[in-house]
Image (tube, rainbow, N blue to C red; front, side):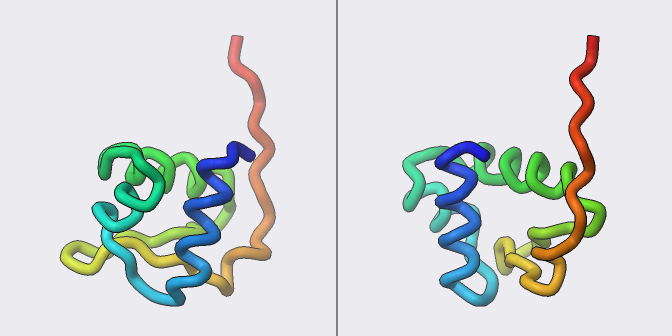
Length: 77
């Protein structure tokens, strides 16, 4: 797992609720678009969504899904 991904998960875990992509982007020195891409990648490897977006609220870590199995990534090509 990349360091920035760990930082994102840590920020969300500490927040305990919704955090805007802009706030996360400022904390990680990336764009809001990068935050949404990171969320998509994180959720893609879990059987249940780990981070949920909510329009107007931001994104939230679903602690109850943190123990969900990870889907193995098979290299293409």
